[in-house]
Length: 122
Image (cartoon, rainbow, N blue to C red; front, side, top):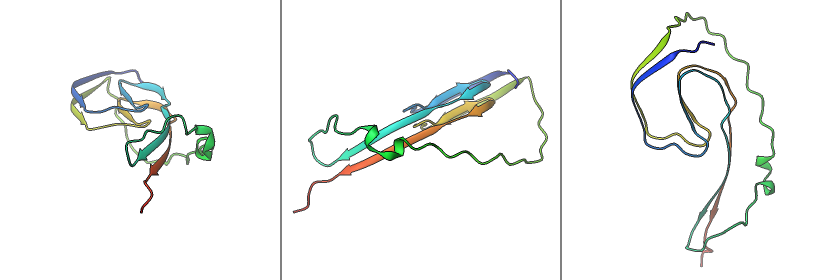
């Protein structure tokens, strides 16, 4: 894998959250991951420490293996540097990657269990 210089004139990222990764330059490996229990509750009462990852099977499942890569006939001209004018990203989140440059291996995993707790209807 090449180790190239990367020249970026400007990068504007509004939001980068929850195990997201922003890299400028060539990277050998990236492995962002996240586990999220998201609770959306109707009303002002707060629920604290009542949910655990171990209580939900989605967090103990093993990920499936990715499909083998598809070979596409192509020609690549490898330059000694990467030149980029401007980058504007509104948001990257939950084990997402913004990469300017090459990356050899990506192993990313994101698991989210979302709850909506509603008041009982009268």
